[in-house]
Length: 494
Image (cartoon, rainbow, N blue to C red; front, top):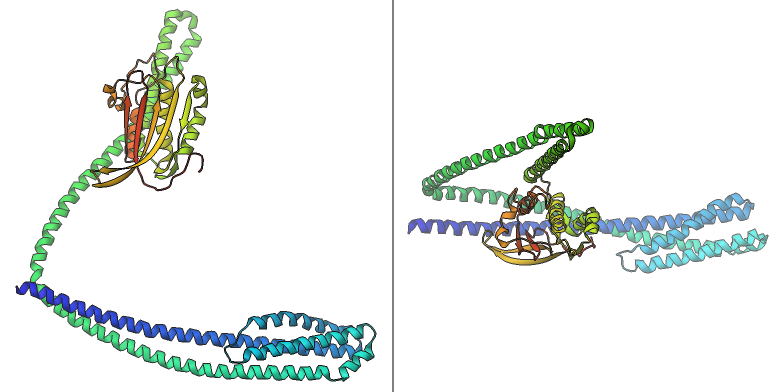
């Protein structure tokens, strides 16, 4: 009973400590967020008032520049004074729009800014009017308008409005600088509180760690025994995996060596046989006679069958060793490419190929190309002599319970069905065995390894391929591939 109560008590202590730690962390975070928020708000307010003050000052300077250009032109009638005048007027328009876009947090400041902009607009009208009169040879009228001091009064009002706005913005700055100083002091206090609470947390952690070490001492021996047993199992399993890995490596090396031998050592004698056969046929055709030429023809056919067999064996061995990574593969595009490649054979046999909606799956594109090329080629090859071949390729998506995964698994099921000569149901499994032929070489060419390649490709993709048929009733090949991607497209969409 005591051994059960001690862990329970330790759990309660740790739970309480975690609650306290989380509360302190949340409290410190709240203080820090408030401080940051206050700093951000104050800084934004200062930035806004600085922008407004600068914009008002630039507006004021543009008015002064425009008025200087006006007076200089009226007094001297020199067009050089109009350059700064027109520059100032152009700046006034953009500066007026910019000032309108700014806002102020000071009560009544918006009305003061509106009054200033109104005065600037009136001043701009007065400036343009006098300059236009002077340009139209009405200098006296222009000077008369200037001497009425209306423009001077407008400028005085503008300057007073500018001073009042900037004075209020300056007071606003001073108050916010004071607020920044206050926030700075609060930040120092927050830092002190955080430092103190962190120190207390460290002390508390140290105390609880000591208590925890004391309480767990009695379980150490048992844990060590369990660890030893686990380490023994891991070592044993690691040895098994190492042996299995070595076996796989050895098998892969043997396959690679076989591929090398087949592609070089075996193909070279065959090429020589074919080359010398061609020379014999060409150079000694008359001496050999009809029987000798028949022997040469048989020899050449045998050499060609041997070459085809070696190439098929190479292809069969490379499915796993030289397979490419799986990528999103559009089976509609794959089938379109295959039908394009088989266009001549399809036309010669007058075959009709119907392709339904096809999915996008995670697969090796080149191996999918090879899989369907073999199946469609077989459907065209093994046809009734006096019947138009019809090949239907269909797809459905379904879910089935998998004992291996102990759960529902989604499958892409693709069926390739033809109306060819078919085969006996007794051979439904045997046709996938390498070199298994159901017909003589004189009837149908081939090495009998194509369907073996198909099965190996499907198995590499985690699926299965089965065949259903009766003699003279065509054949159906059902391919089941696990769903690795939820992408789906209709034929021709991608």
